[in-house]
Image (cartoon, rainbow, N blue to C red; front, side, top):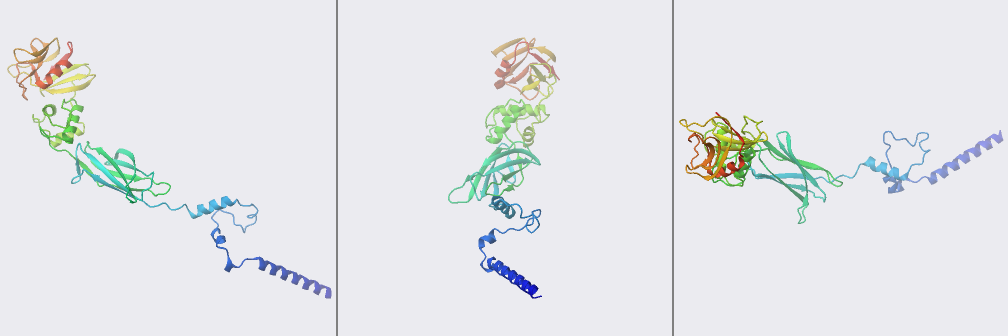
Length: 368
């Protein structure tokens, strides 16, 4: 009995000593090292709990623990940015056809390497997409700046969007301009600028032989007259806004009656135009004056058989004959209606070019 009491007392003393030793080794919460707090982690869903059996059997990689900790805390916050665009060249929500729409944009909180993607929309359709560099505005400013421009031609409702893609140090941002349209002014002889320049280009694109450059010249007037004749409009040389707009759509060209005839000439007497064609397409279109009712132009298919340069005794200039005395030639008077003695008169400024374009043997189709 005494022996059992001694054994129990010894066991109690041993357990007390062990508890005191463990208590002396455990750090006090009042003196915890802040570094220990910074590296403390919360168990994420799906990670093994160290308290579970086997969780402490594998020695963790310190580098992997650090990476996981950073992932759980999230990547460093990107610096916010603000992108803005201002459009130049617009008045009352419109830009004149042939002029350029100019984008002057800024990015607040500029960083080297920033780029902005400019997107031009017509309605919901992307017309143009281009990426431009953002440059430092300087003078201690945190602003970056970018520029972009485009000549406006086709009608429609447009807007510009600027998109700054995020980088290593900055967040993305984007902005859009207000909607704007294209204005097509009426033009007359003597007008100059980007609008007449565009008009000349559009006429030439469809084969109406106009001048080149920024002036509404006599050649422009003749080309507009030919366009009006082909499209059944009043026969004058003024380009209205509606004509300008139609040209900007690529509408109002001449449809060949004999597209398979190779290099040839077509004279449409009802519309008082002459068309030079090759490879199944319209090459050039000119205004003419054919035979008056008392002396009508012969109709049918013929071939050019003779060419006479310069003036003749009748005032015919650079003549190309297609049957007997019938020819196409330059003349001092080319009214908008049939007025010749049977020939196809063309304006003097166009005569030499037409004469050189025609080769002996080329067919000509003359039809009502």
